[in-house]
Length: 390
DNA sequence: CATCGGTTCTAAACCACAACCTGTT
DNA sequence: TGAACAGGTTGTGGTTTAGAACCGA
Image (cartoon, rainbow, N blue to C red):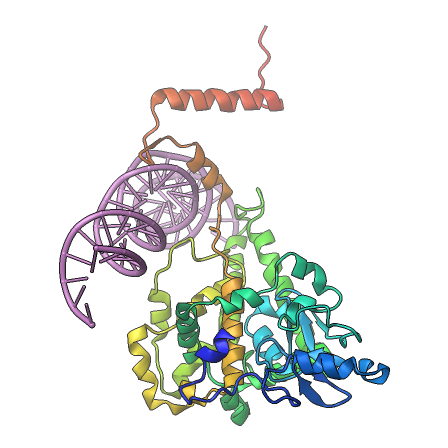
């Protein structure tokens, strides 16, 4: 695979995909629980079609991210089967990813050899089939990702504290979504039902509710334009800012890098300008994604990390790196480029406004009169403001 | 490999004006 | 304390344009 060739980490050896335990030559595609063996498609077909007993062996696909561990969850949004580690890493990246609906991976049924073994995602059983038919799987896309994407992903990786670091310093990472503490909770969310998970669920659900409620509240009236009522606008703004701060804090992995020697002034993150086309929906959680994506240092400043061995890419295992690349791609995939309309009324005015070479032009008196007549006509049609005349 | 010219792509700027915000009375 | 008012600020979309990026010679 391309990514395996591209990401040897300079070491010269390929430590990415686990090789088949049988032939030791091909990359494994499935994990046989009964045999506790990682098998390539060829060996899997050969072994598990040998007899009925073998054909009943439960097998699961290999994680599409790290290609080294059995997949545990199927993300329907990503249409990807992921191991627990990659699943937690990817889906704890941001609230949006967190909302992805995942289901536990079911064992592969006895006969799967009619499907191409090189496309494990495309033959995932059950719900994902339709998505595969829709071409939703990104396997091919992943293979065609160019070097720029890899570079961008690599630079993006630099600002994330490593999971290893988080593990070693649990006192500092307990509030991080990207850290292991939350990862564990996150895993609990999937697999277990601990009290912590419930608490987290409640908090997260509450936060989501608040988060989802903000646009409806603040953009009442014509459902977009904010409604001011007794200073409510201020409160809503504060609530919005608070939520954004919360998210920035929870997602503030990049900010926290400053604690370990790499310091971007906080104001710098705000000084980065981005067009309205990039900013996405204002109250949406993707705002955090955008802001985070802009916290990447310029390419020329990578040497700033030299003094911080914790964050050097060399510390990343191939598994971690692939997971982070996948997470990056996930975020990239979920970027929202549509422009945010905060005030529909302004939009309406702008659309009806006369233009000269795209620029707004002054309205002539005739146009003003026409508009007044139209508005009067509307009032008449709607039955308001009618003064009967005889 | 570096340079040059042409082409393509991207993002900022521009405009008027209603809505919004903030401070003052 | 809340209402009223004035003045400054913001946001809106289509087009243009400057500059970056790309590509072949």
